[in-house]
Image (tube, rainbow, N blue to C red):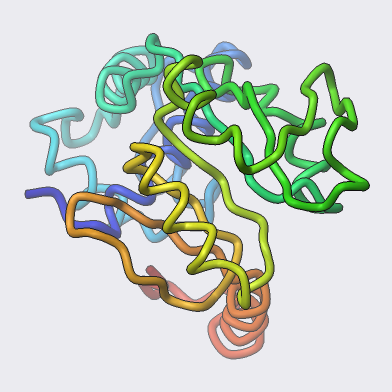
Length: 212
């Protein structure tokens, strides 16, 4: 079983590897990659070791091969159809961006309960009433939901999302929610992330420590 911390870093590795490939870089060593992505080289080597012998001592890692390996792990050749629940300022920003650098990630629907937002068209997507969530999730083959709703409404909303058959949820609210064991929820608490960043910057900046 690959540790969750490693799993969370895979998309980051993949993104930077693609950047290297686009720049014509064919080979990179862990210490060079470490400086680029600000993750200790020991952590990188340990993470990579979970997926076999990806590199060679003294040679480093073959960038195109790593891209192939991580692309297969992330299934980047398969479209992930996503719904967004909560079309406020943050939700609108996410819809407008719509994962431009990751063509397999695609927000195809948006929902809200605010009458002033329902019917609004954002980047080609019309905001629908939450009452339509279940039918649209089924019709569009949606597998993932991003929630950008207030913490006070999050449990009620996630209950509706789970009832619609969604099993992968990204929640932009810090409050931990109750979901069935088969449902995966990833929480993004921007305040906590920023405070953690500031703490490490003030206490460990330039130190060779494993921050993750």
